[in-house]
Amino acid sequence: MAAGDMASTRLGAGRQHLRPLKRRGLVLLRLTAIVFAVLLFCEFLIYYLVIFRCSWPAVKTPADAGGLGTPEPVLRAMFLADTHLLGAVRGHWLDKLRREWQMERAFQTALWLLQPGVVFILGDVFDEGKWSSSQAWADDVGRFWKIFRHPPHVQLRAVAGNHDIGFHYQMNTYKIKRFEKVFNPERLFSWKGINFVMVNSVALEGDGCDICSGAEAELLEISHRLNCSREQEHRPQECGDGQQLPASAPILLQHFPLYRRNDANCSGEDAAPPDEKYTPFKERYDALSQEASRKLLWWLRPRLVLSGHTHSACEVLHGAGVLEVSVPSFSWRNRNNPSFIMKL
Ligand SMILES: [Zn+2]
Image (cartoon, rainbow, N blue to C red; front, side, top):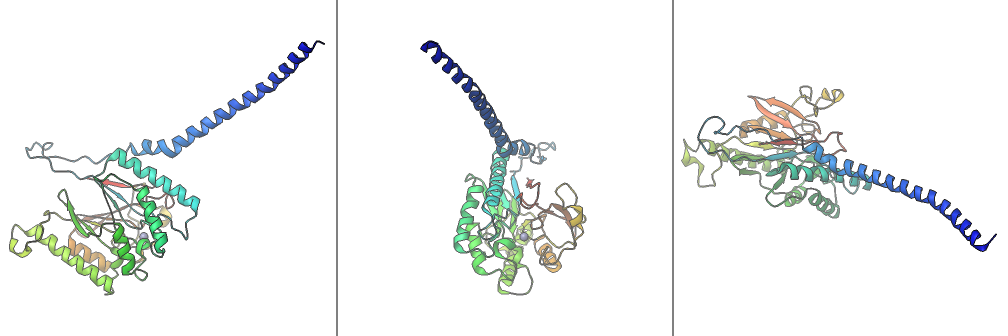
């Protein structure tokens, strides 16, 4: 055999080796592309597809009703609850990474698609605020602002939950102050004609402790200001020179729900599962005490109450028809279909 023939035979065998290699490369490339597409869909695009189906409730303007008045300014408010950002003690890093990615994507997508003016988080923002060291707290807060970053024209406010500052007997001024340093401590504020009262429901134990009596005194003061604004037309001299509030019933925002026996009367797909619905609520633990609930309703005469803590949704009427909406948890760790509430 000539030397040239030998060389071409070797080259031929080489090409035969190359072909399966090339095929394997192609298969690998295709597989990578599929994995990438699946990841892109499941970890990114799905949030747009799902949240795109949500829309703000329709508002009847005077023009719709045939009137000539100028339309009222509308405030788009989004309510989340129980985000439970995992802490240093109980949180596994992978669990943390996963849950926080899910919440970040859901929140950022909702912000982009729905453009709310204000976002409220109804307590238990952090899982371990009740015991975390100052270092762990700073770390949790840093991650919180990354997940829930928002443009400056969007307001974000939160009320404290039992996981943020501890239940009544774990709670102290230091934990309350450090929570309020992160979130605006203002209890009463008005925006676009709506009065909001941010209630520290953990401090409504009713045992006369320093923090509890302070919280009640503050609520009474707010009640006085709200009553003045409602009656200022009739008795303006009683209201003093303080800043005037819109003359409308407030919306209460709190972590613990007002007292209810259980979740039996809650309906809807986000309500508690049937095996949990009939579990009786313990006062001061699962819900506020009956006494504290009555006080809130008497003093503030709200038009709507929004609460968290139960991790499931519920719509319930109190007393003379005051609606309370319990907002389900926003974390996949607590439920398989986390959600939020949108109100105008
Ligand atoms: Zn809670």
